[in-house]
Amino acid sequence: MPQPATRGLAGSSGWQQSTLLAAGTGFVLGRIASPPAGAIGDETEVRWVPRRRFLRALMAVAVVAALIAAAPAAAADPWYQDVYGHWAETYTRCLWEEGIADGSVEYLLTFTPGWGLSWEWQSRFFPDRAIDRAQFTMLLAKAFRLDPVSGQTGFPDVPPGYRAYPGKDAQPYVDAARLAGLVKGYADGYFRPAQSITREEAVAILIRGLGLGEYAHSLPPEEITSLLSRFGDGHTVSPALRLEMAAAIKLKIIEGYPTIPYRTVQPLNNLTRAEAATIVYRSCLLVLTASPNPFSPDADGVDDCTLVSVFTLHNRSIRAWEINVTDYGGQILRCLGQGGGQPPPVLVWSGVDNHGKVLPDGLYYLTGNVVDGNYQVHQAAMHPVRLEKKSLWGSLGPTLVRPGQVILVTAATTGGAYWVKAGPAPVTAIHLTPIGSPATGQNWQGAFAVPIDAPDGTRPVALTAGFDRTQRSVPLAYTVYQPMSMVAGVVPDPAPAGTEATLWAEVDFPATAVTGSVSGLPAFGLAPVPGHPNRWSASFAVHPNWPAGPRPVLVTGYMPGRSRTVEIAFRVERTGPLELQFFLDD
Image 1 (tube, one colour):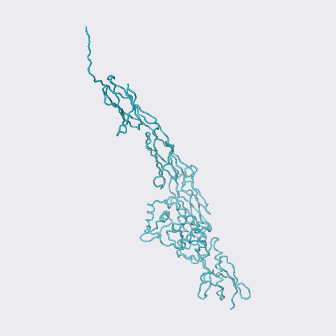
Image 2 (image 1 turned 90 degrees about the vertical axis):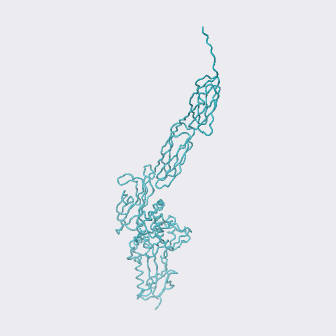
Image 3 (image 1 turned 45 degrees about the vertical axis):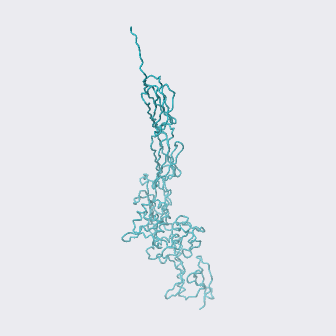
């Protein structure tokens, strides 16, 4: 039998096509594609096949062409032949129609009894195989519509041209996910693209892709432990991925397996391709995010509302949609919108409930759903939004002080303050130091000393907190009051004339000097008494000619900018010989 001539054609898919010509006639019998070099069953020439076998191959090519023509515009592959009747068919079909799913489209040499060997196009998803790290990253990168990044290789083991599927370059998607913060690679810098991805790794990437990484890192350690302990194997989650796994549990993204006697999350098990498609279907086909988050509806013109971005299906018509703000239990507090057709890309929430009342500070959740043209309902993963008014509270202690005393400044903020300062302080404004863990707010503390020469009276202190593009201030005050209590005396009292006496003073203020002034003597200074920091004393001579009786003394205590004087008296006593007096009487 004569052999057909062949003429090479450039196939758009990268496969080498050949045209079969009837020998000597030039009549085109049909076109078939031969596999690329290195493929299983690679042939260098096209062999003539019996008419029945050729017609069967021609029919197969026609079926594939019809499948490609019937596929949605975004679907790059023909529909997968191995997903019919599979439990994940609905989920996989939706991702395929959205242009998110990838499979293997190969031209394989197959054998059929009664027909023999033939080349056939086969589009397969392999739903029950483990999905590797590159394939899962491609799936999420497409689900989140990340722009492929070519030529910026971040991992040495994912160079340009790395194939996660036959003929499909994974590098642009892996590096797009890397730049978006979805994947990080291992400590050695490698990505290990062909390694099967575990459930915990997939959950961590998903949490980051949903914009929930910061939320995961805000969970306190005790809550993380509590969330993981709900499952019998929660303790087996890798330490580096506990935060993301706990967040996925908290937000009801994963519910675990109904194993006996305890539910499990099986964090170290490999994820199958069907499971991966299901996770993306349930979490990524309607994604809600908010910015700014937190926001502060306090009417200062800064972050008074948050913009809710709605990311949803593009290639399936939307029949109905609804977006709400709820509490953790699912109670609707505010309906942001509902209707038919495609939802708007952005909705606005000003922090009010359905009655127009501003909700109290706290954590709320964006929820929603869309109904597509096939009446399938797509739920959004809960997205937390923190309503946190920018606020500042503060106090001074004590508020009634003496010069030189130290005042403690304490403050508390909500809304993410960058700094807090108190001023004008005695010399300059002081910056407070944050203390404790800022779970829902932040505490601050600082101190300053009242100047030693501060006069009596009330002094203002402005407590100010700095936020993003705005500030908050609280007026505070303290009162300086220095009674300058002082007592003084002379010993001995009475003091004999012609002897020496001691003038002493007891002060309850930080005296810098104390002076005494005894009537009939020049003023003199008192000296601190060793071992008695508040006691001063000095000796003076009681003049022998001073008559008996009281003699006034002025004692003055000094401190910067002020003084205190007290007046006392002591008695002079005369103890000399008796005088003989004569009286004449006539």
